[in-house]
Length: 174
Image (cartoon, rainbow, N blue to C red; front, side, top):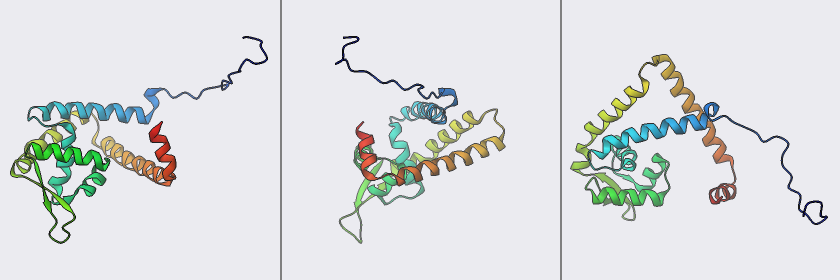
C-alpha cells in the first residue's frame, strides 16, 4: 500500500506535549489521595466498614438529618452512588432514613446510635493518618499546601462549571 495514491496518510503532530508525572500536580494529588485512602481503608476494615462510608459519616457527624441530595453535594458524588452507599450504611445499622416532618416527600438521613458511636474512634484514625502524612514537614509548609490546594480546587470547580453541560456529558462518555 505504501506509495499507493489511495493509501491513507496518518498525520502525526510534530511534537506531542509531555508532562512528567513527577511534575504533574494532578498525578501527585491523586497518588497522595490514594495513599491516604488505602491507609484509611486499612483502619476502617478493622470495623467492617467500607472506605466510601467514611465520607458520608464525616458529613453526618458534622450535621445529621440531611437529604440524600445534600450528602451527594457535600461528598461530590453522584446521587445514584449516594443512594447505594446509604443503602449499605442502612444495612450495617449506621444510618436510617426518616421522612421530613415538613415535606413528607423528602427523606432525611440520620445516624443510628451505632453510627454516632463510631465518630470518636474514626476521627482519631483521621487525626493519626494526617499526623503520619505531615511527619517531618514544617507546619508553615502544611498551611501553604492546604491553602494552595483549596485555591486549586476552586479554580478547577470554576472551570468545570463554565463548561456547557453537553461538553461535560460527552467527556464522561469517552
